Amino acid sequence: MLKQSFISALLLACAVHPALAETLQLKDKASLTGKILAEKPDQIVLDLGYTVIVIPRSQILNISRTESAETGPVVSSISPATPAPATAAAVESKTASYQTAVTPPPIKDVRELVNQLGEAVVQVRTPGGLGSGFIIAEDGFLITNFHVIEGETQISVEVYHQRNGQLERKTYKDVRIIAINKFEDVALLKIEDKDAARFSRVLLGDADSLAVGETVFAIGSPLGLERTVTEGIVSTKTREMEGSLYLQTTAQINPGNSGGPLFNLRGEVVGVTNMKITAGEGLGFAIPISSVKYFLDHRDAFAYSNDNPSNPYRYLPPPSRFTPGAAVHP
Image 1 (cartoon, helix red, strand yellow):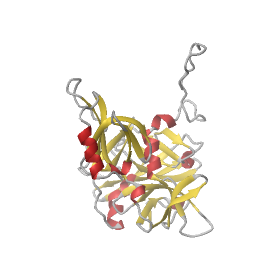
Image 2: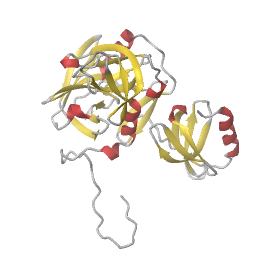
Image 3: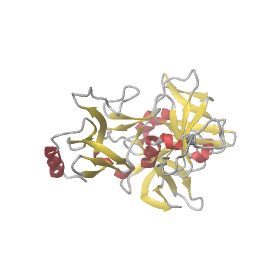
Image 4: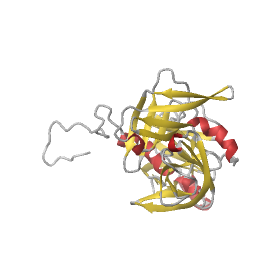
């Protein structure tokens, strides 16, 4: 964690900023301006001109790109696609945006949160089966597991819209695969039906801030039973399986829950449910939301080619001429 005295010393020393730089707003009301050298799921490497520092993402509220008065106006690198609540900041990732809370939302009970969030949890259907998902942007972007849509191109999404206090089921059949990451088991889809209205969406939280023993709950469609709610606790945050770290939870996870959200009591998604151990009870697992944010922030690297469904990546065309000794860039 960055200390206040350390941040203050850096701000005093940093008298001259580059003409084009990124400004990081920190939780302690300080800010740093420099050039971002690297962005990782848990930290950002920032060049201040005279030194390079590593800043934990948990300490960063906002990132914006600025230009000096001589070169032009301020241009924000984080801009909401639609008006966001006062407690949320929209993070734009190419054509897919998601929102995170600037200030922690209040803790509520599960019953209240289910009524508030249930509309954003969807059922994902394919000819081969079904799973769950959750909408991250009002224009129809949603997250699910890769294994839910693996090998499928005919995908439909069932959404439960609230109309006059009642739930109205609506099936959308024009669903496009935007990006996939087989190794992290995540997929980004988009509902493109012409008659689609604006969708309710969820906030993405921070799994790092979870405590072992903290209450969480899942919403999904186990065995096709849509809008099923299961409650539990976080058993561990660092369960390693096949080289990846998972959140382990006692919230019941069953076939059909895959791709659905795991919420904290602030109503933020902290994980994506994707598997369980069938030989026991209360042994469910979820992908930490930090992996999903990284996936969304680098969506182009995982872009799905709709022209060739068997190929999940797009490749650049080969160079027209190769000069011996010349540098080759990917």
